[in-house]
Image (cartoon, rainbow, N blue to C red; front, side):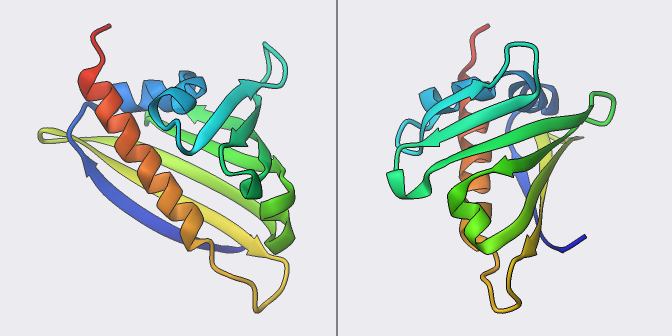
Length: 147
């Protein structure tokens, strides 16, 4: 199974809007975080596999799969499939996002589960920092979305 890091953040926007972004609009991350992401695209139009290309070439490209998606409980899971950089240190990485309604917005809970390749390997704190930055960028996007 592995170890995990957990984070809860209060966001000043509706849970539905954040969940909608994470479940259907991840391709917009390069637009809302242009200094981090160069491109996010589906591998196959009908599939759940995506390729993430980072602006910083030392991060490489990562491929993940999405699912399961629980629309009733506003929860979504991403699992790393490929990526030279993370797979140097980890056998596996996955992230579960859960968005719950809270007064004045929502609470985003992020659980990053990982299995190290080596006992002395690093805990992926920097990955969790990026996940937190992603939450804040989505919060701003949802707050300003005029659709």
